[in-house]
Picture 1 (spheres, rainbow, N blue to C red):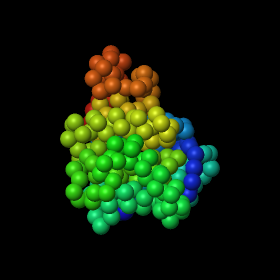
Picture 2: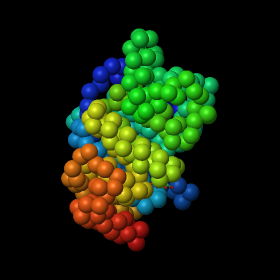
Picture 3: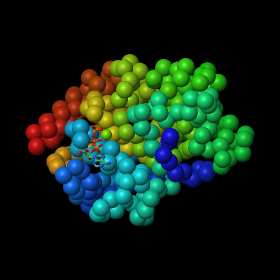
Picture 4: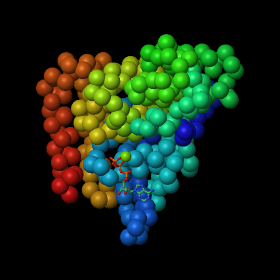
Length: 268
Ligand SMILES: Nc1ncnc2c1ncn2[C@@H]1O[C@H](COP(=O)(O)OP(=O)(O)OP(=O)(O)O)[C@@H](O)[C@H]1O
Ligand SMILES: [Mg+2]
């Protein structure tokens, strides 16, 4: 199921930040600090990627930002206001699309899931059509998710998030399970969606190329407990192109810096 909280209509955009965030979780050997001193500030309309070695705390951070996990210290601010629980208008998309779609509902009705109780039938239909168009799935509207490819199913999940008109979209390795071609095509669709909607996006990924290609800023978590080790502005011109952008010296330099930061992180 999609874990979300959303305003009914036109929630607008939002900034999201956290200051001196600490998260302690219970492990087999007792309480463990997973994150400590995490400071992150994502301005309205920004695309920020979060990288870090496996187990560094990326999903934990996203869960805290989504209000699904309580911080042990520090706070999360949405539009400058401290939030307690899921902030309004923040929608999360997970990697696991197969378990987030309802098999007995058509694509259209899956996309409507987060808005159908809050909007009139015609408004809801309009939003669904608009979202399906953004991810190029109009033709599959009456199909069932289990008849679709993995990439198409993930597009349904993204369409559902878009239909809610989130102020902030949190994405946890949304393209992690997809092949390279599908992944590239979804990256470009997401890029287009963001250009159209100017949604604030926080995007967790293991893929350095993907992070640099999509983002305004790349953040690398380092250390145990983890904090922000690197925060790198990406000022590559938009719209970006899979081949041309990735050949730019500036792109290669940024890519190199992120790899170096991850190497340092895994050495710790
Ligand atoms: N519910 C939980 N209870 C206790 N410890 C947890 C829980 N969830 C995660 N952890 C621990 O917190 C640490 C960070 O986990 P998290 O899932 O945030 O990492 P990640 O960076 O998202 O990793 P990956 O790249 O593999 O998805 C890990 O050491 C993990 O074992
Ligand atoms: Mg994770």
